[in-house]
Image 1 (cartoon, rainbow, N blue to C red):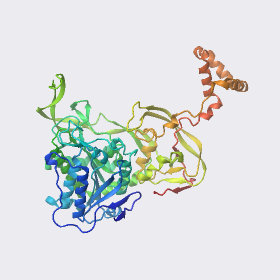
Image 2 (tube, one colour):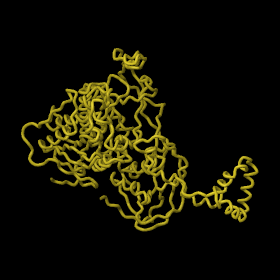
Image 3 (spheres, one colour):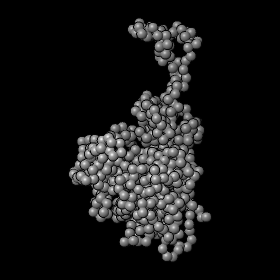
Image 4 (cartoon, rainbow, N blue to C red):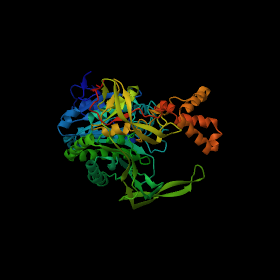
Length: 598
């Protein structure tokens, strides 16, 4: 077996098939017209066949998943160049498509195979898309879920017959793991994604939300969050053109994902989706990638859902090929700007004062008696279609901002977190000697832990921090991350504790919320009697509190606690609720060396 090293860290590409390509036609049979989605084994076999048949195609393994099976990547390159750096040097765009993150939502799995065949055999001239683009496809991301198929998963879904399980082998929802990366799937994806460094990204899904007349809906990442020129191009040129082409050229008109302003009332308007970094598009857009998520309607027939994704793939990649020079220029400019950017937004809120009017084709929502239960229930009446103009709210406003430091220091006690940056192609350093540094440190004044777990974590929300400048001792081997990189948004989002999707929010640092020391009642009182004798001001403060607060004066436990808080002895609690990742403002005296990826 040949081994190819892509010229970027942390990703080894093993070639599945190689040698002379075959004559004739590739032996691939899709079954979506019969309401059947290919199994994982059939899917990989199809790509192996394309790899065997076409020299412009290559199937590779790019890491492991939680089920122990390899994650595959299929690439199509007209000039047979599969090296990301070389591709970018030629000025071509790279488009990455991810399928089967929720294997019960399999349209993209089957659609991507037919799309790949259409490109490779130049069906209806589709091969021209490859003039300026290289296509990369993850055949199935959640292999563990894909291997577990049943007709009883997603029972409200109109096909296919057998559907995969939503969660992966670790029982994780992989579309909540992109930023924190608890799973081997997510680690493999991060290495793959940051090595390819794609210009466009698509993740294919199915939604079981409100019913309407559309087969396909779209979640674009929020233009408000993007670098300004990228965001303007995305909002004003790319998205309108994709909606136009789907509406006028595909036979499958497309609408933004239906998330209503007022629950169930579509006519009141729909909103753009705030895709947090733990979602695929939220994560990929942190690296200045134009990111999309298709959401097919669960109630539409499976063959139509597949064909609509094929149409979107063709229109998205055609647009990328036609506008590649501008797309590449915008991304490169954004990479440079983000590396130099001083201020970053941590959280956003919808602006309810700004909207655009869009045409929407819906069904009347009615109440009728359920034939199953006999009770009245809500449903969308397909006998009462309607077309109306509704508001679409797309603008989000910054809520919380932070200025980047010169560097972040992550003590080596937490290095399993700091080293995660290497999987994301972020440069990390270590201190080469012990140092005493003045740093900005956060104290966690408030963090509300969720009662129930999400993704195996008790989420910390409503995080309030207090920043102080303190002097800290650091030691040889502590990690240093300097936010002067194109991945700065990822660095800041993960290390600022009050960012909504940070590692602190996902409770990786919860031990710092525990008290480090405390007093024992036994013997404590006698020591404080001595301290009060030595400190008249402290005694005066204590006596004044007792005199002004009768309830306090009657509570000996409260009195001991009060003395502990106001006396100098409380200095031993300086570590309590101290967030361990600190911010260095002046970095010129740092003694560091680069950490090399394994």
